[in-house]
Length: 317
Ligand code: GLN
Image (cartoon, rainbow, N blue to C red; front, side, top):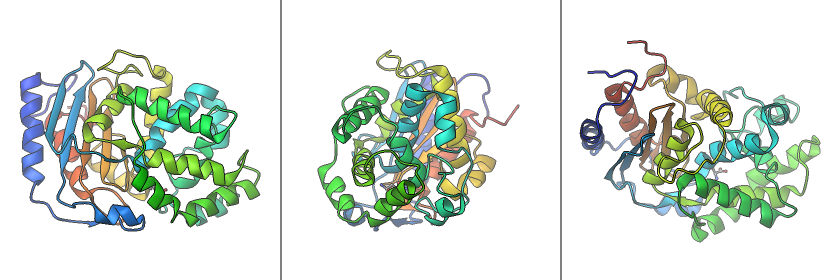
């Protein structure tokens, strides 16, 4: 059963969200991230699912309200804020829009492209994007990120201090990327401070429910469907979702687009949010990851939702 055009009624969507959660509740594939020490300690059985409709309908299942760190999912929202601030052309000159075909923390991808970050969904491009946040100091830039992502979520988001401390003490590779960008003249400001803001943005604490609201804001032309607040323009949503479609799941983005047909962004804590423009967003949280760093169970559950709710962007029937 596939619906096109609009979502089925609230009750039916709710039933499908519950069904998707139940279907993958026993799935154990993948491994919890351990390169950030504190992430290795999380309960791997946690599993939450949420759908938010552009009309404001809310569907939460399982551990949808369990907090975890947003990690790389922050990249799509900071990128949206950067385009909102500086415009499509300027941001495009600074950070590209093509997939690297390489891991999210690849140094080689940056080196091969003469220090020009290939896209904002991998660490090098994300660090360069964070550097575009307005503010005279790193503290002000961080405040802008926190406020901006909070507006997407419709509630004040806060830092998970433990995750921040753990990653700040172990992120030599991201600092190397920051200094490499600087060496190519592609980063204004102090690399250590910019990487610190980036590390903080990754440690913002969210739930699957929050991610679905954030994604639904992009699905709704930039208006948060729960608070009614305009966060970014519809053009910014379009630009952001195009880049997310190409690179949101890193080197597996093509596989995902081929099978599921939705822009989606993952983070190493186990979150994934997929956005269906004009309809809504689906978010999953489950800590076990595949080799590219994408939550196994979140991918399966969101895939099921995409099929059952008729969300595939490329399907005409
Ligand atoms: N904070 C993590 C890092 O920079 C984010 C990576 C991710 O979620 N894939 O490595």
